[in-house]
Length: 288
Image (cartoon, rainbow, N blue to C red; front, side, top):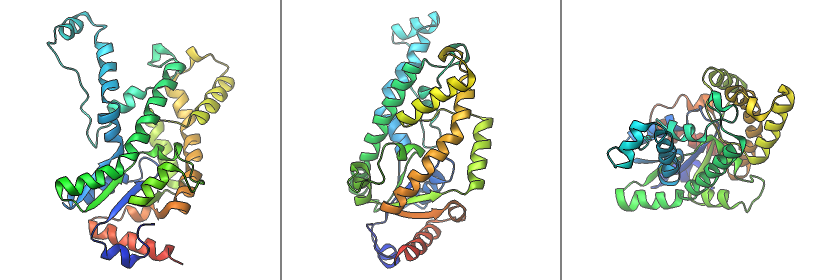
């Protein structure tokens, strides 16, 4: 790790961290607190995905839908209107909407082949955005004068790395520039995330092998064809399995590459100084 002890961390003129873990456990909340203190640069991987790497795909998809409406088609063809996504750190819905859900088109579903294609686009975009972290560390200091930096990752970071490989290119790059911190949720947090997701299921990304396995299992269990799949039913059915699939991967990432801080401890952070003290305590606990 780039900080060998709490003393190194607390005395560092440049504090650089990366937060990872399940969506909904406070990565963006903590990042916002640090940013609002005025001396932390907040790099949102999901925002970078939606603007730099998938912005054109998202806009073109919206235009494709608009072209089906004669009134809007005429305006687009004459450059009379502009269609774009309004992505912010707190509103990443355009990315989720583009990813979509597989299943019955009458219920808003995508053909599984198209769904897989978009999943792969997201995978490539997220890897590229993660690998931009070092560039933004340098850019934040050189251009804006920020010496402190927080990378706010998406929940799917664990899908694209091999945490057991000491030479994994993504993990090697990130750990060389940041202190990697897993926000670990409890069983109660997981249950609440499942309940929250069940109320409002949202698209998410999956490791290709995991998607194939769960898709085939769902079709077999429901005795249905691809075109008969209820999109929301599938992603609800898959969500808890996805969390269970990710948890050991997060744990392995933290064990080899970083620190673990419990979500309930992170929930008590109210300021940058609270965060720095919590990380210092985690470093003390980690140091043999």
